[in-house]
Amino acid sequence: MLIEGEYGDKSLLINTRYDLSSNTGFSLVVLRPDGSGFSRDETDVTLGVVDTVDENGDTINANEYVKYPLKNGDINQAGRYKLQLTVNGANGVLVSQTKYVKVEKKQVLPV
Image 1 (cartoon, rainbow, N blue to C red):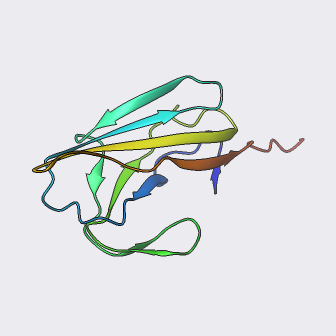
Image 2: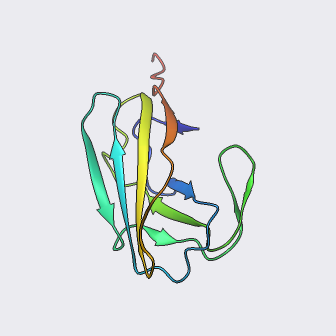
């Protein structure tokens, strides 16, 4: 689970369940709950080359997912974010299934 405003050591993982190791580029589109959004390319979105565990505790195989390290301002709203990955490869363009990520409201404690 992500919290509104998080970035730095937090990343978005997109599991394709497809070997991406021979592909030439990635593009990630992220839509925020209010409909605004941003896109990132292979300079920011990288192939995951080691097995990892996603936010649900499920193992993701190496070379079958991409990782995007969140930057300041990326997740600036609570709600449901929509992620869409496009992969450029030898056999054309592959568009991943849409992934939804829930972002919780940042809790401000009274002083």
